[in-house]
Image (cartoon, rainbow, N blue to C red):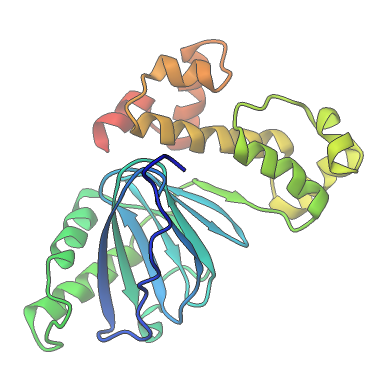
Length: 260
């Protein structure tokens, strides 16, 4: 955490006063919400800044053009990479039909972003037979139409493999190969490779590239240059980094920066 960051107080309500509730919190760099869960779904979005959301199932990153959908009952924690304008949409269980059944990163286009910002300005006690109510339902329909985004890092349950993934989560510039991790993990490189595929659906190389991509999004959002980010993350040249970024997200880092 940064010097001024803090664990934010748990202000999640005991129940929802409306079927859709918007919560707006401005977070400083390094601020966090402790792990918690609730009986309703949550669409976690930051109009500015990057949020990292952690669950037992994986690690999710949400830059401004993305959000994370959390189904009811999923325990999660939230961490702000930089200053963030956190906007959370709580959705009552009876309205989650049509939304993903598992934790998912979803794309936020210009229309959805504006709907979120408009909804956040509506009083919490909005009338359920009003234009505000209809806006909330349009907002939910737009979320249901959102495309999934590849910003998810599945986490293993095997503790030997967790040793490897924890090291990479802590330091995405870690370039050690599986043979180097084997002694610390307490398993052979061959066993670790098999576990990566069976528990995450990715090879070790694919999982590490995905971790680097998420780290790149964090750094780019904090206004680091493309060249600086590429070199910090171990790429021999900015062009190699740009190629990886384009292949993963369908845009260059410069295009990503201009759209956020």
